[in-house]
Length: 182
Image (tube, rainbow, N blue to C red; front, side):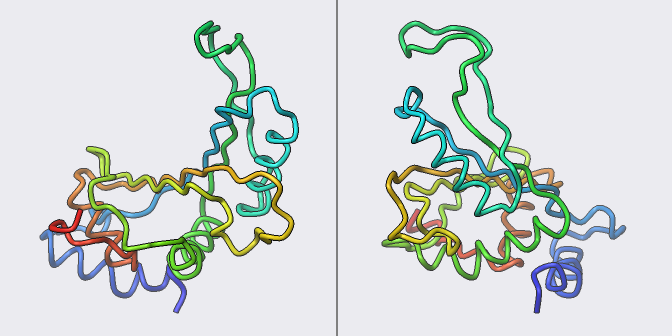
């Protein structure tokens, strides 16, 4: 069953019962998914920039937006308007397809995976996952990879608290560790 159908059929009634929502519109939902690559050590390397762009395009199916620095910082050798990262924001069908791929395919492919940290929620119920290697995604063929880089995935929700956000993502099948092992 697709993840969007699981949300509508199983997660919404379970969350209404768990948190006592009177209206179906009070139930938290996934609003957007943002993929982010910070260039860091590859700021001056054009090959690193190109690899990050190609990776985001393959994983998301969209052209990434280059994020630029707002001001110069001499200690980090950053000048104003220099490209310091790339991001893609997913909504709608692409977002649900990506979340399904993330939960069912990519997370199990992560080396030494023991579950997601339950402490990576912000105070609004949004969840961030950091990948140290982008090769966990099935679109990336490891024999073609020249440069390995990190990737951050942020799942934006309409939840008001971290507890609501965690309950939503748990009902969607995100494999969280126990709080005792966190």
